[in-house]
Image 1: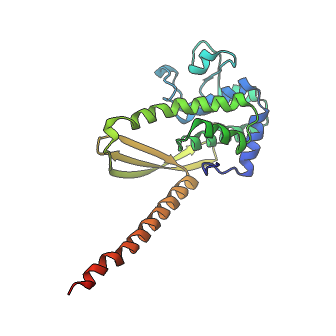
Image 2 (image 1 turned 90 degrees about the horizontal axis):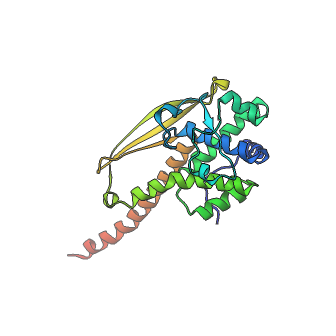
Image 3 (image 1 turned 30 degrees about the vertical axis):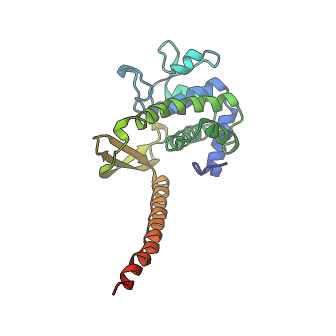
Length: 242
């Protein structure tokens, strides 16, 4: 079974080809760099080492050392700036920027779905056509590490009767890097507050917002159809009464 969680464009396929060509250690370094830029607090690193802007450092991990997989931000490992990372990857500037964008796109899309790890593993292999099982496992481990806290929170009793009580939105502007400052991506941030006082923020680009809107439209259509079917049933008993 395949799920509609990501759209593979021609540009994305080119980016995936670059990912497949990377040595594992380089792949892992770029993967962690992109992840930290998207969610700098997710790794749990000390505040002094936290990164929130492009151009800061990123740590690497060794493939054979399982302890570094669990702690990808160990300070004992070498660090790279963005320029050093570009030299490490060793591809033309355009391909390097496409590589970062492809990683960002994949990580953003998998963060919006909660599915079985085995299904995500198959999707990465078959739909994205990632060729190295170690690379697939690295993405999967990162996804599981991010998803577990969400699942634990959902299992909490405080979510049993939680409802959205307030919603708002704002616009942000994302700049890919100082290497390509002219390219700016508008992002929508949907802000919701639950009855338990929990804040939920969802960041989406234009395509993702359009997809969400279309899903709401489909839901609204289904609800309208169900209400239309129930209306004649409710009117029939009233018509039979004298």
